[in-house]
Length: 295
Figure 1 (cartoon, rainbow, N blue to C red):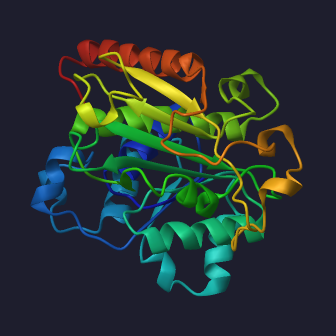
Figure 2: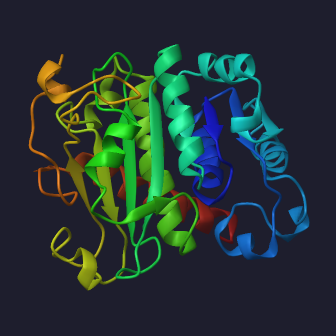
């Protein structure tokens, strides 16, 4: 498993994947842990000033000894092309959880070229809504079986921007838990775990445990934890990254759909993923009670 970006979303996701049993884990991130990261990152104050990816990998090896975790203190964009392809090619699923749109697009193109499934978790950034109130999880299968990251960027052009690490810790953890379920389903397509993914829809929008902001009330009309599975369309002209376009859809997941609009216009049932998230929260709560203090 490869996670590009070991910030808030990528950090909690890495721990969750290790807890599930994924190994090896490869983490890539160019940043060091700063004071402002502490409120929404699994690393604590003892790791201040340390490179995030190696420090997080060390923590995972200590907390989950069966997991072979290695952290690379590097900018994925600046790695040699052969190393980028090697890291992506050696992973069952690639996760891009950076706050750089350029890096997200580049990971998308490398994953498409190497032929690996990829997942892009993020949170909405919009002055009309609370930080991290809405999470976005997009997954991409190679071979034009689904729209890619750049197709989706065009789809939500009129909506909120996204980034990987902003907002409250609890909201970030919800996104990480949901992403872990998507990654697990993609990594095990032949067993029951893949059933949480709707083949007709390739993005999940997740609302947190707080009252709904006016800016997203049309998409999430009720308060509390909820999710929407959304059909991301291929663009009308060929996508510059995957070359997919609306009129050459090659699978049910790529079928001709509407022109997009605000996520939630073409909705599906998000209850399987939501149920998995709630179960994870309950398990973590029980574990925290068992150990006396929450993690």
